[in-house]
Length: 171
Image (cartoon, rainbow, N blue to C red; front, top):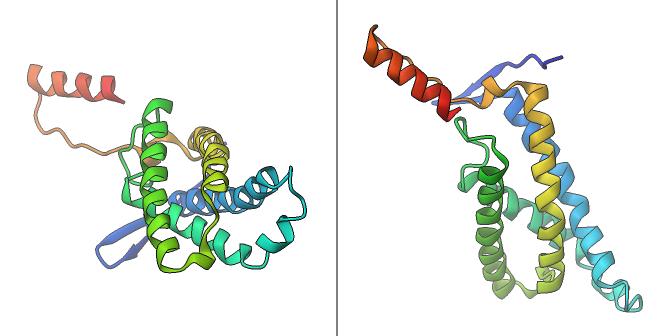
C-alpha cells in the first residue's frame, strides 16, 4: 500500500506531505540517539552521568536541530536525490561532518551545550544506520515517484528515445 500525499505551497516552495513525514520520522529517530550515546559513553562511569544530565536535554535538542539543518543543507530532503544506499550514505556522512563543525562552533560559543567528542561520534555512528534504514524502508511505502525528479521531453524520434532511455538508466 502507498500513502496518499498532498502538496503545501509556501511562497514559491512546494512541500509535500511525504517530505514532512520523512523529516518527522528522522527527527524522532535522532532524538533518542543522543540519550543512547550518553548511556553508552558513561556506562563505565555511572557516577558521572548525573552531572551530565543537568544540561543534557538542551544539548540533545541542539544536536538534533543542527543535524537536521545539516541534512537539509546537503540536500538529503530534496527531490531528485538518488535512493541508492551509497548516495544516501555519502549525503549522511557529509551532513554529519557539517553538523560536527557547526556544533563545534556552537560549543565554543556556549560550552554548556557540549555533548563531547565521544558522545557525538557514538551518536553519529548510531544515527547513520537508523537514518539509512528509515529512508530505505520509507521510500517504498511512500513511493519512489515522490522523490524522483520530473523531466518533460518534447519531441519524438531517436533523440527523444535516447534521452528517455538515459533517464531510465539513471533512475
